[in-house]
Image (cartoon, rainbow, N blue to C red; front, side, top):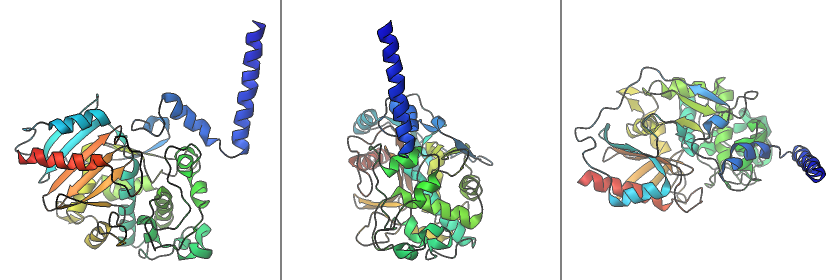
Length: 384
């Protein structure tokens, strides 16, 4: 009994000293990381982690359900698709043809209304909000200096940083995109309760606007710019600009850093479902129009889905591009394999949500093999 008491005493002392050290070294965000992710058996953020964080509601207006195609669900998944869905933990797979639901299926206990984490698909929404802010005159242009909104970026190379550089991932900052390292700035940003402090600590170490380098911090800075420019919280701006006008069937949630600071995790973390995510892909497919009404400037849409840099043909402004099987796709992409994939010539949208994108933990400019499979197998199904 004495041994047990001593053990508990020393364990409490060690834990106390550890926690004190975390606060002294400004790494106390790790406490939240351990509590919300690591103790739950995960090594990184996961698609159902929304309720572990503070959130804000993205309201929907009048729901506009997608119509079903005349050939709705007349074809089943291919054998290859079934295998990858099982291996990677797919929870939603939807094919939209000619703006109608041609195929849909949900797995692992999820359904058409289940809310799961968008991860970096949120970046496309933030870029779209930038376009809306330019259209409405809150931001002068893609070339307006970030310094006009964020005074921390007014000196040295940072003085050359433009708003459009943030959307096109060309900030030149020292952001390090590492998802599986507990000490990376990416991990800090996910768990820290003061995201503005994290973003404002970034340093511009390379000439902005010269080259693509995938960095979630760019989108976080862009969100701060938009909020400063519009005077609106980003979740409210998304509600009024896109979520309601596009007839979303469900309200959504957007994670914030804390109730105190109330800043969205702009680079990620919109909790919604496959068919509501698909609406943003349709908006861009239709050149910014929704039911004939211009929701987003068509010139901005075209620029967004065109590569900014010849050396990086995979990225435009908030959107990815991929050539496959003689076809051109643009897409929203998120950690662990969240995808809205659009082929405008064929009028096809493919949505896949799930727990994993396979064996690869690569991030940034690398297209993992699963994307090709989801596209190829969808087209096989469409050809039957």
